[in-house]
Length: 483
Image (tube, rainbow, N blue to C red; front, side, top):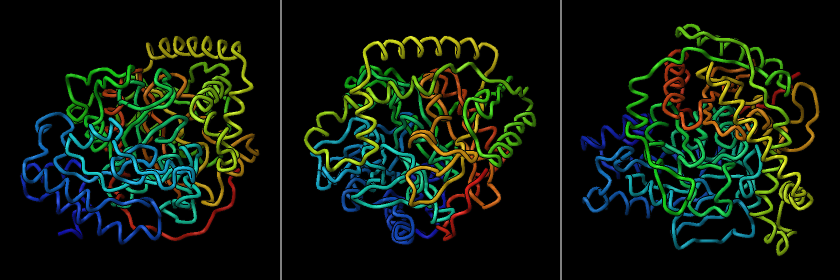
């Protein structure tokens, strides 16, 4: 049985769990067996907690951990992965840093507590770049995570291990986080779906940047219905996160089961010529975005005015690094990778006037996006400016033939959306000439996750790429850089 269970969708698996056709232990064993098959090829889940998982499964089967049964997002004993930036009680949690290589927290993050209360069984920790900083998943503690479509390529970052864990069938759902695209780029590169929710939709619990909307927690999955289920698990008010708010009266799963078509869809390939995008990505994404017309949508090529959004994003990102890393760098500077030091020192050099300017620009952008969404129901962009690149690089060598200014330059299509406050989801839309996944980024109205997921579900049904997962890891070579 375990040889086939890993192929089930999360929705199918939870349905069978609720009917008691299978048990949580069956799924834990299937997950563990699948990890034993594929981990050596991809390195997605470097830390496992199988005994802890089996103990949790037994408690659920004995009726001792079923207090959330009947609530939206009840997972009934479904195995999941937790990103190694987020504490799980009694499980090694390194944040991808040699400073914390042997760290074992005594208490779980409030989001992990919520997931476990809702019947999610933690199988282990998914790999991440050091402190989540980077668009390629590697660190000095665990090494590099590889793309299952071509193991010579990156899976993206920073929720790279999570994306690979669901793409290969190691687990059914993956927890992650997103600042500048960390749920969306790994989704694009691995042909999974990753959602950046609105700030406050999902608790961050222990963040030092508690009042910043930049970084959020969110779900990854193989398809949109599974993603909606996991968002139901995560969503809701948390007293430890002042930005959180109550879950909706209608679950996201119910919304996806009864989708409403967006009437007017805006599409932009490069945000009005603002950002570089590789030629083949341009061609594929333009063609695939226009397929919304087959659903009956009006599709227009138009972009909001994003203003100096890349500079605004870096101002807030550098401030967040300063809050999170300044004191640690003072103590352990030689143990930090250069990108983190660079980003933190940008924050140290930044004036209060620069932050005030960034706040004014962010507010103005939010108002322009509000006006834009009075006309359009959905904004569609490429999920990334390039396809997956060499796993040994920290960023793509070039975009459209141009050298990147810094490691964040490969994330500008995603980080621009971060500044708007809108939710965004990566959905698969095809493959390039070298067989690398390509995705679209769908952007909705603030707190408009239900409508966004509905649009994604309708598009997913139209194109059908979700049916290609899960996959066995495939060896390959690195294609040449694209123009």
